[in-house]
Amino acid sequence: MSSTSTKKSKKSSNKTSPLTTSNAKEWWQKEGIRFQCQGSSQCCLSRGEYGFVYLTKEDRKRFANYFGQTITEWTKQNCDRTQGFWHLKEDPKREECMYLKGKSCGVYEARPTQCRTWPFWPEVMNAKTWNKEVKTFCPGVGKGALIPPAEIQKQLDEQKKSEASLMKEARAYQQRQK
View 1 (cartoon, one colour):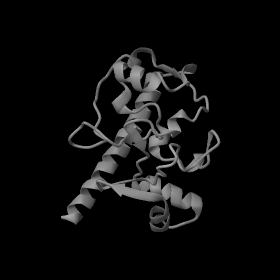
View 2: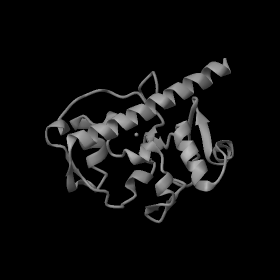
View 3: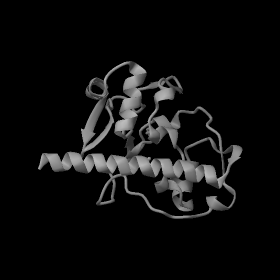
View 4: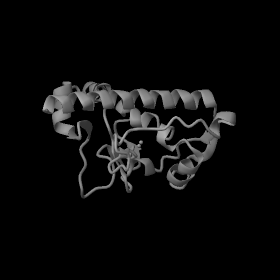
């Protein structure tokens, strides 16, 4: 979540942003990838450098509608801002997402783009990163139907659009702070 948990990088070595991605076109474009969520909730746990669930304005709007609140109300109650990026609040005593109920997402219908597009994030789609960061911890990899390259590309494009929106929102916030 870049926890969906897995969230995006808290501590990135990338100097521009924790959300910058590569455009590598690789191994998966030939046949696709077998993937089916196994309900392990591994992607809902903070792990190492991955920890924030970043939220665009559209994500926050979806959550607010789900909970019957205004965007402002929901954001104040459930979000923090780090370097201009909105993300779900985290409890340092818990490694799991605040909405994880048992091994299920308690807000599945309202889940943010970052969670909707897992595991097809641009930053993990090269073979080396996929094998190290996704395949080794996500039990859904290699299971279920073959996801065709066009569907994977659709997920990647959705995530890239979300990341572009996050960057735009963060830059605007940072400009207002000057």
